Length: 184
Image (cartoon, rainbow, N blue to C red):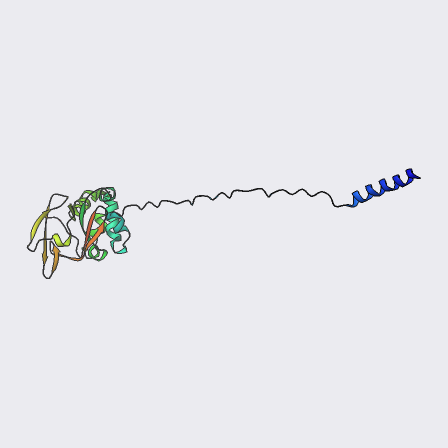
């Protein structure tokens, strides 16, 4: 009987052990290091705003830009400089005698167009404040002289009125004029 009692006790112990909660293993949660990416900073490179860029960005100079392109002067006027450009507006080109502009833009007249355009360019940067109070002759890039003056009634170059002065560019300055200058 002792054996029976022992067997019942053993079976009961096993049954209780089977019903008891399983051993719980506690583990610490894994430490995950959060990787923070460095922000990507894109360096914006601003292209210089050359005389050609300024002219191309202003619809009042579309004829001048077309003439510069036809003469092959775009690269030169976008170069290091510095240059002072007396820039005629579209209205100034429109005031030329009928057919003159169309003729100048023809490939066979490139030399004449180049001479006219370079007559509008003075080497160096000449700001409006630097213009003389009395008429003074200044050499242009084409070798001919223009007469500039900062008179009380307004600055002029060869009699053409400067309607807007000191338009800055990275390689010089533009003075807007109301007439196309024609070399003699």
